Every structure is written in structure tokens, then in C-alpha cells.
Length: 475
Image: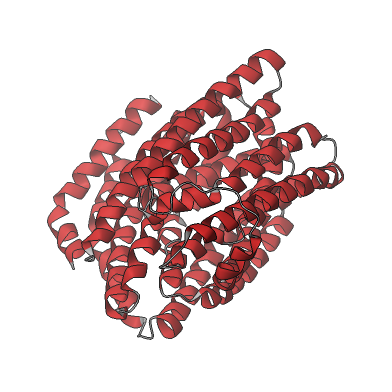
């Protein structure tokens, strides 16, 4: 196997995920026009905890399986059986936890929503092993097909429940149940064609011990990473209200979509492919640096466009009732380049079999993020929270790559930073010219037409400097 297999896997992952994200993006626009910020806020208030309990049911099993070069059917079935018991337990605990949510947020009865979410947590737990089988075999197109089909079924059932029960928040919540159900059914079916095969139940739970070392640190990282990334939603809902939470969650969600297109679509391919090159550190470092440069160029372009066209993008995607999102999107867009690169770092810690180092770096990042969120909430305005997060992610960027290069790659980080600065210099002229033209050329009052014209204008500005951009990407 040669290193080109990484980029073939990335291409499959990106093309597959782009299709899935396009479907999600369309549905997001429809949901935003039907449900109010208040309704989205109530849904987000329970979803943030659902993500936490879903993470508890995972406990780092997926990356730990991928990290194993040899993995037997006995290990597969034992760990799958363990996820079933764990999923049932976590789902039951989550339902009990929902009574605490009544007290924490006040004025809301979460039990009907929690019952739906609890079932989805169970199916997500069952999906861990079969999905890991597909990831390990780099079947990213198949995974994307599963995601698309599941999203479509989830979309249909949202409106069925809305029609028959006229419960807007319950219909939104049912979406995650039906998505998790169909993901489990389809993933299990397609896992039959993988090297690991379709998992079966047995009573040998001891097999979890074979991956416990790697999984423990991976789970520790996921645990602290959850709080550093979701504490803002929890505190905004508690202290600033559900309407504010709906606005904040939507703006952050829109910022994450460019990350999905750039980073999140690529990272699934990194660990299963580069793990095979673990003994050749020079190859790993080189590919890391090249991938970072390419992500930086792409994400800076997206970030700049989103910042300049925040109003048009918000109106076209969400509709007129989400105007309060615009100032937050402008601030969050500044985080896209940093998060785009930073989000790949975990995969490279995994590739180098350094889960403990990943945990330590993640712990430091969490402390910085939590402090920033607390200060922003204390200030009492959403924009202060967003500014604080931009600063904290910037600090965490330098901390993470200090640890990675010094203790993981065991090389100098200075050259890495210099290469990123060179890429910024290469892309800067096209962004500056576009920004100048945007502010001095008369704008169109129609948001749809304005957005299309700006996409064309931005593309032309990039085309002028495409020779230099390509040259930088090839280095």
C-alpha cells in the first residue's frame, strides 16, 4: 500500500460526505422556516445532553478497533454484545436524567422527549461496531448512502408526527430517533461485506479488555472535549433563555457546515489509512503538513466569503426570522480556519498511537474553552461568548501543535507555522480584491441573486491567482 491510498480514501470520504451534507443542508433550511428559534432552543437543550450520553455509550470503541491491526471475529462479537448492554444501560440512565432537566431549565417537561432520545441512544450504541467495520475498510461512499437514506426517513417522519400530533418539539426530537434506527439497520446490513463482517451476539464480554487501554484514553479525550465544546449551549439555555439558545445553536451550526465539508469529511479516512504507515514517521509528518496547508487555503476562502456575505447566507438558508444570527455568524466564521486544521489533530495522535498525549492536550484545551465560555456567559451577551471562543480556539491551536510536534512527531513546529503563513500570503490577494469589490460595487436587494453573484465574483477573484494557489498546494 502506498500513500496515494490516503488521498483516494479522502476523496471517497469527501465526495460521500458532501452528498450527505447537501441533503442535511436542504432539510436544515426547511426546518428553519417551519420551527421557531424558541422551538429549536428547547430541542437543542435536550440534544446537547443526548450527545453526551451517546458519547458515554461509545467510550472510544470505534477508534480503538481501527487502531488494532489484527481484529478477530471473537473480539468483534464480544465488543458488539458489550455495546448492547451498555446502550441499554445508558439509555435508561438518560431517561432518569431527564427529570433533572425539568429542574435545571424549569418550565419544561422533558420526559416525552427523553423517551424518544433514549431509544436513539440505544440504536447509536448498537451501530458502533458495524459502522467501524465500514470505516476500517474505507467504505465511505457506503456510509454516506446510509446517512442520506436515514436523513430522508428522519425528514419524512418529522412531518408525519407534526401532522398527526401537532407537537413541533416532539417532531424535531423524533428525527434523531428515526435517523439512528435506520442507520443501525442499514449499517448492520452493509457490514456483511466488510473484512470484519456483520457482528453477532455472544456472552464473552471479556473481549472489551483487548482494546481497553487505547479506548480509555480516547474516551477520556471525548469526555472532556464534550464539555469544552457543549458547555456554551448548556449555559446559554440556562441563563439566557431558549430563544437565545436557538439563535446561538443555529449560528454555531452554520459555522460547522464548512468544517463538515473540509475537515469532518476528511478525518474518517486519516486513521485507518495512515495507521499502516505508523513506522515511517517522516511520511506521517509530511502528509500532516500537506493536509494542513490544503485545509487552510480552502477554509480561509470559505471563512472570508461567509463573513462578508453573512446576511445573504442567513436569509437564504434560514429565512427572515433568523436575522439575529448574522452578527454571531460573522464572529464564528473567524474560527473556521483554526477549527478546520485543529479538528484533524486527533486523528494524527491516534495514527501515532498516542492516545494519552491526545487526552492531555484535550484536557488543556477543555480548560481554556470552559474558562472562555464562563466569561462570555457572565458578560451576558451571545457575542461575548463567540469572541471568547475565537480567542480560546486560537490559544488551543498553538498548544495542540506544540504537543504534537514536540512529543508525538519529535520535530520542530516552527517550519510548520512558516508553511501556514506562506499559504496565507498566497491566498490574501484574492480575498482582499474580492472584499474591495464587494464593498464598492452596488449590491443587489434580492438575497438569492446577491449570493449567486457574489459566488461568481469570489470565484473569479480566486481564478486570477489560481497559478500561485496551485503551486502552493503542490509543495
